[in-house]
Image (tube, rainbow, N blue to C red; front, top):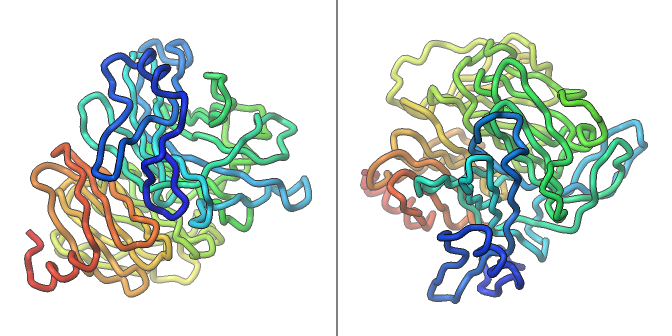
Length: 387
């Protein structure tokens, strides 16, 4: 499915339907809407023997990362292209298969991060499109452009060439003490550190994707480390997002209902302490006491896990969904809650903005995709119909 204006188009990519049906019996490769029929672009699977586990593990998140030609000297990792709204080609759906024969359906987009739908049918991630282009294989002499799928399984991050027919990833990064749980890519990064990785221990790393592709090892290289050993928050890091136009700022959400604002340029080991949360049921914001602290702010969102966060393309709005079933929308600059809505039942698991920032999608355990017009949601909120 392709798009040139941020909205999904009913024109389908050719040649994928028959092969997808052959590889995925019983799994629908299309759906119908009043606008037309949408088909699976193509299916990308991985052999059961790929994973280093004896038993299969489900892919938990997929990120699409596009790198442009290197623009600086070879000794310095270069910045990457962004998921630009001006791009004419947008990828809507990708399939990944893993060792136990299950399939994971991923809608990739938003701020560069996405999650999946497993066999239970729960909606795991949503998007209205993201840029894509041709790619080249990465290796130790990697110096070109490419489009890559980044996904985590068990204790490893894998990088796969999006357009290659080779099922084997071109890069695997292993973590010894904690499993990766989420990641986010920023094509506008100015210093080469364009990839964020969050762990179940709460730790967060920023790295250069290009530098990881150049290195032949299986460990992170040139990483910046934040919330080391859970020094600020030791609950699982559930979602990461770069702040659009934030000059290196990013947000990390955690399973205890808090999210933290970091500045990439500051030392990740700098002391940062925050006051005790007086009322866990209320939204609150606290700032670090010292100018050198990192993170610089803590937002307490809810009781229970924040499952996903997503910025509007202009960076003015931040949406969160959580274990309590609420979709919340914040004015990021003013640090205020402006509106929200609750699922029919169960947790909300994912959220994404339309390219123009007028609509929000959320999906969750009720097996529904909740589509909201922001203006109507603001009106309903002002009339106290949040529930």
